[in-house]
Amino acid sequence: MTAWKTSARPATTFSPATATPCIPCQSTGIMWGAAFTNSSATPLPQGESTRLSTAELCALVAEARAQYGNNMCVRTRPYDGITEALLALAEQGHALAVLSNKPDDLTVALIGRYFPEVPFALVRGGRDGVPLKPEADAPLDMLRQMSVLPANSFYVGDSNVDIFTARNAGMTSIGVAWGFRGAEELRAAQADHVIDAPEALPRLAREA
Image (cartoon, rainbow, N blue to C red; front, side, top):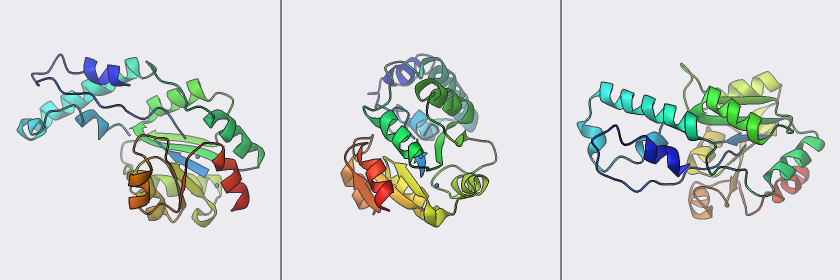
């Protein structure tokens, strides 16, 4: 994922910045959270975004989006054990869904590529006119379409934004410590549960 961030910069006049890794695709009455808009600004040196005009920032985001679309599968794979955990959840009878702040078309493409055998009820990315996470609009709309109550749902993610999204939507939050941010951030955000391995997901869902 570092590759697309690096390749998006040559057309700009910014000084080199250390590219930070993005989360590989992840996903889940169980929903997963995965972000694009904020991450596209990460490689900018401190203070650069404030000197750019709105048009320049929009152009940079558009270029980053195009580069990401062309390179989003470079050095990307599911976390070990996650496909098996998702299939186990499906076998338990849980409705599975993916919600990402990445653009909707790219989110759908990623999930289709890496999880073709997982029976997701819905896969959603960022859409025009729909507030991004941590706002509750998107997850609540998805739950309505799946006929699942928030109180009967888990929201699984690896960042404080995912935990805040769950809380705003009235869902139980599960933080995954193997992801992008780590257990400390998840606990600081007061996740309802923090787990250390994918195989803990079906067990936790079964016991809930």
